Amino acid sequence: MSSSSPAVLTLAAFSTSTEGGNPAGVVLDARGLDRDSMQRTAAEAGFSETAFVIPAGDRRFAMRFFAPAAEVAFCGHATIAAAVALGERQGPGEFVFETAAGVVPVLVEHDDDGRLRATLLSVSTSVAPLDDSLLDELLLILGWSRSDVHPAATPMVAFAGNHHPVLVARSTDRLESLDYDFEALRALCTEHIWPTIQLVAPMENGEWLSRNPFAFGGVYEDSATGSAAAALGAYLRELGTVVPGDVFVVLQGVHMGRPSEILVSVGESRVGVTGYATQVD
Image (cartoon, rainbow, N blue to C red):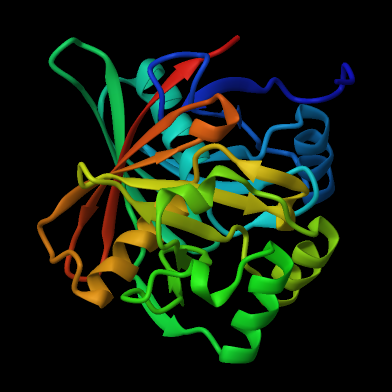
């Protein structure tokens, strides 16, 4: 990274270990940086996303998120990383982040062992049908067939800050491989502004196994996607699989050797996402 670039912290979000989670870049004071500077910094950092934090008042911040190849409206794992970094410096409590997707409050607190963790509350969620022809195109790009999709889980597009198509696999075996046409998926996701595709399968213990292609941002696969986990909460609520008040765990990054644990709390219209973040550098 060039000497004129801002300082970028690195935190592994949704893990208590530097060997797991999704590494996020965090610029704690991005005042004076324009969009091009942020995009260049994110590309140089090379993380799936980098958060740029701009002070806007007492424990209130404007925040922008950049993948190596594009800006995204919201990023859950970088939000968790930034909140923990701020909590370490300003103490636990609530922070408010103003994002392109809306206002996102985040509560930072100590767990029973004294370790900081953060819980973000998504913007209001929504779920919409996925057009049949668009579904067929997506399945073709992914190398899936309709028989790979769980018969009781109609694919839809769920929103909790970003729009994520959600495909529930018939079994966890389908998630063992991820081999797709990167440029074709990148073009499709860019056209529809889908940061990642949420590919999930239910596990016998009630947890959900997840993989997220992130061609939109120039990354083959994301090891932890907070906004997609929140969108999954909205999707499962729409199906009736969960109800407000339910809590479940999403396991992601397992196939990448970077296991991540995302705790999802389902509300009436919003979804909470909880995780740790461990500083790498």
